[in-house]
Image (cartoon, rainbow, N blue to C red; front, side):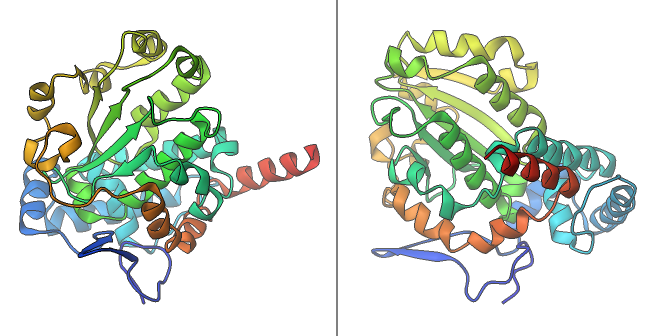
Length: 318
């Protein structure tokens, strides 16, 4: 079965049954609301789209050493949308996206759900089953009392975020509306705070600012204790204004959070009224596992020669 936004063939659309609720990726075409936002915010019309795809394909052919699926229009659209259909910007984003994978080879080498079960079993990383009032996906990270830092590293947390965002990139509606991230830091301890290092902070910031082909519309920090100031001090000097302006600290002020994410779109734990079930990490893992071949296909592209050199270098060290 061929799904336009996916690089691999699937026998059936990936989904997991949760009682009366079906957890799945939304791989269908844009909703009327999505089409309206795409046109108003991203300049997306059939004419602009066709011209941008052709221009991007031409530009990519000239990028030395880069292997990408040039015949796949939907793949190119996922990079054109966050760049508002400016082909040159999309080409530069694609290069940064793949250069980042070479630079951080240890994080990306053969990255797929089947090899990262631990982060999902720890249940500190989840996506809300519903979108927010603006159609955005909501990613939740609980890096306080729920996080057993001796059992799951921040590198594993990073890999889990990459796996989620790669999945989000498959969804046309998410390509248009983007995503917001909630960091619940309730109960963060000094021992946990020490896990954050300058190299980790730089990797995260570089990734978010330069190498994520998705519209990150807001990062919301909630329930943070004073010790979180020590953690944020690592990130603050390397944030550019665009991303810095999208990081909002709420503490325990729920009304502050509701100004950005509607109460009707939040679960009861945050004072919201959503009646969808809380999706556990292992349930997300079950869904992502059904897309393992898609991640394998994703890993076949990029600066493949450089990646292979890295693999050989790594195997010689063993």
